[in-house]
Every structure is written in structure tokens, then in C-alpha cells.
Image 1 (cartoon, rainbow, N blue to C red):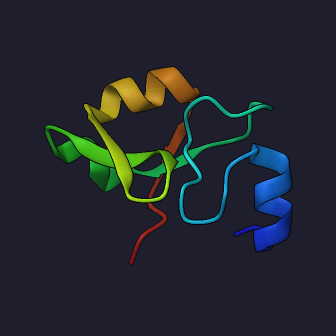
Image 2: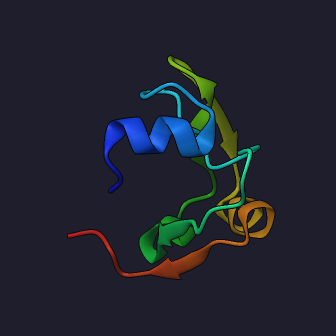
Image 3: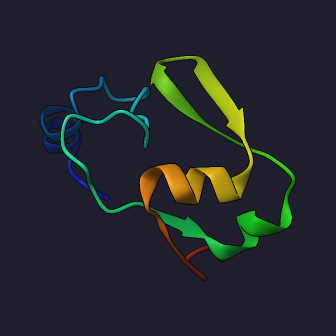
Length: 72
């Protein structure tokens, strides 16, 4: 995880609303592979308290994410 100030500066989003979508600079996104077992997932939509729901495969495609067993 990035330091909060670094995350805000790099993504252009305010902490608590950092979305994997629409960032100023494309960053590596890693999605826990267990998310692929759900029909949809929620991610930040770029503002605190605002989420977007989409299929995990769409999230992977849109962000060019990698999947890995990162959760416990």
C-alpha cells in the first residue's frame, strides 16, 4: 500500500475515494483471485461514498489487472 499523500498525488483522487478506474496515470492493479468467484464486485467510483458495481472480469479488463491470491 502506498503512503496516503503519495496515493493522492499519483492517482489524482482523495484518500477514501481512490478508484482503480480513470486514474491520471495507469497503475498496476492487483485483484484477489477469489473475487473472480463473485458475479459482481464494488470498487470506488472516484469520490468518497460512491461505488461502481461491475463484473470482476470487466474490472480486470478495464484496468488490465493481474489476479493473485493476495487475501488471507
